[in-house]
Image 1 (cartoon, rainbow, N blue to C red):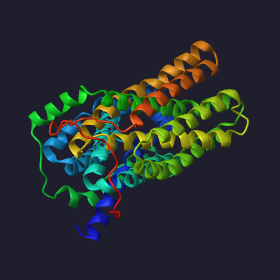
Image 2 (cartoon, rainbow, N blue to C red; image 1 turned 90 degrees about the horizontal axis):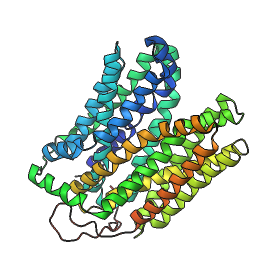
Image 3 (tube, rainbow, N blue to C red; image 1 turned 30 degrees about the vertical axis):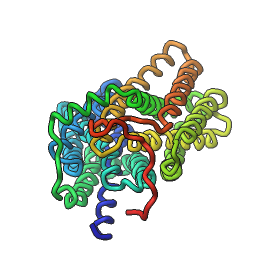
Image 4 (tube, rainbow, N blue to C red; image 1 turned 30 degrees about the horizontal axis):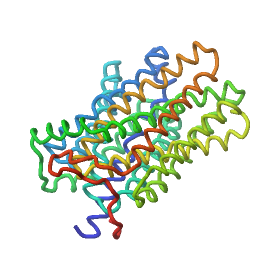
Amino acid sequence: MGNRGRIVLLAGFLLAAWNLRPALAGVSPLLTDIMGDLGLTPAAGGAITTVMVLCLGLLGPLAPALSARLGLDRTLLVGLLLLAAGVLVRSSDGLAGLYGGAALAGAAIAVMNVAMPGLVKQHFPARVGVVTGIYVSCLVAGAAVASSAMVPLAREWGWRTAAASAAVLALVGALVWAPQAFRPVSRGGASARRGRYRALLRRRTTWVVTAFMGLQSLTFYVMLAWLPTIFQDAGLSAEKAGYLLGLTNLAQIGATLTVPIHAGRARSQAPHVAAAAVLTMVGYAAVLIAPATLPWLWMIVLGIGQGASIALALLIITLRAPDPASVTALSAVAQSAGYTLAALGPAAIGLIHQFSGGWTVPLLAGLGLCVLQLGFGVRAGYPGPLGSIAGEHAVAEATPSPRSPGP
């Protein structure tokens, strides 16, 4: 593949990464309009996002099945097209379309989430850290842009058009990625896929990586759901609380762009994981102790910790398996369990807040989860034998690939 082909490949991959969050992040800013138009209760409105996040957890295993039949490149194209269809259905009339479209979009994002680390391993094996950092930065930036753009779009064109705008981005991504998707591919059989999963589920590393992925997702979604409310209860205005949440997203972009590059060059990612977890814990503790004192500083610290954590979780998934198919299988297990756990976190913290009458106990619970994240993350960060998930070698040492010129 020539330089032009590599540039188109990278551009299509990063456009796909940009599509991983707008359909999710764009719901919250429109929720008041959606509930008012359709006569939904707050619980029914919140269920739109809940359906999507649950699909991220429950339907991730579709990706290895699709990639075994179609190849990873075509699986990503299918995900982009399904995402566009789901977003359009979700924006149509009726509750069936609203929730059915949300489920379809969530399924598409689940497939794409799982396929992305395998695609990094397949197309950029010598630049795993760099490409992981760029693609996670695109993921975070896509969420931030979508959150900011929805209200102005809805004010001008209505919430349905605003929500449907995410389909345009997905279709552009599909168009750019299509030439890559229609290249000849080799596909593994169903028996090889079953053997890969059996071997994968027997290995301790799989469950350590899965626990780390789940816990960092959980601590992230807890803060995403409740930070504005915590700040408002501490006396800050709703507008300032929203700006502070946006500041956290900006800090995450900086962390996701830089941390995987350095961590991908290291033999062990444990020190990076430990630093990210500690920063997340400092952010939690500061919000607990002094939410209205220097809140901008706490949000920068929290954003760096959380952005680095998600980037490291995805990097470790890519590094710990020996080949693209094995990476996809590990990604399916880790992300399915992780997002299922993450979907339960905000509701659980809300219940603790309701019964405790304040934010002290919920935030202490969040700190406890951060401690668990630290423990499992450090263990996942040490290079060790995941073994051959594909059953081709007795042991495969998970170490970063040597550096070479970029794509």
